[in-house]
Amino acid sequence: MAAPAARSALRHRAEALAAQLPPLLVEAERVAVTVSQGVHGRRRVGQGETFWQFRQYEPGEPAQKIDWRESARSERLYVRETEWEAAESVWIWRDTSPSMDYASAKDLPTKRLRADLVALALAALLIRGGERVTLLGSGRPPAAGNAVLNRLALEIERGERSGPSLPVFEQLPRYAQIVLIGDLLEPLLEMDRLARRFAAMGVKGHLLQVLDPVEETLPFEGRVRFEGLEQEDALLLARVETVRARYEEKLRHHREGLQALTQAVGWSFAHHRTDRPPTTALLALYGALARPKKR
Image (tube, rainbow, N blue to C red):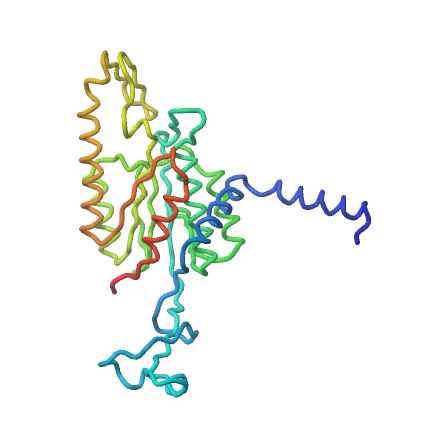
């Protein structure tokens, strides 16, 4: 058993090491662990040498696919499946525009904090599965490993706080995947144009809209003054409840437009509210990334 002095020194070193970790990384790891316990890995059948599983032979399949050694152990024919070994390359982007700094209550995270958390937790899950990850626009190629996750955490926490509401288009490898996280309130035409440019290269995309609950329901009553976060003119409404139905309809139309444009290019779309657990958003993204792509 270690002496008290040795245990004390070890504790201090451990505390010092933990203090160096960005708080965002600690929280992201916690969320990633929670989700990883309830989902299957992203392994899938493909061209590779790593054994995955045996499955029963199906009539019409080539006879050379049969594993005769395994089949000899029973009265059935079995096929030996291997795992697809080519790791995915995933580019992740979060909206860093000023509008993401909004939170309607002190006990709620801002949209920026939630987007950052989901982005880093997703990176943690992907890296655990051996995938290569980077931030879109960082200029760094995708890579894997714990060191990459630590770097991503620092880049997110120390990154710009007044970036564009949509990512800048850049050339990506065919069959890459991108994840775009933000409030996605930009005009649908701009969103559609960007998605089609990426899709034309063979890139698969996933959109996650992050909104504050107030932005979905507009629960205010009476005279309210709305001030924008991106230098928009202030808006004064004498009776805000009179525009609630029209506001909700406009948001619903916008969200349906996002759904339609992503479906048109074979992408996925999900939405998330900051008053709900981040695991729900992470599950939606991870599930979309896990679906095999048509090639």
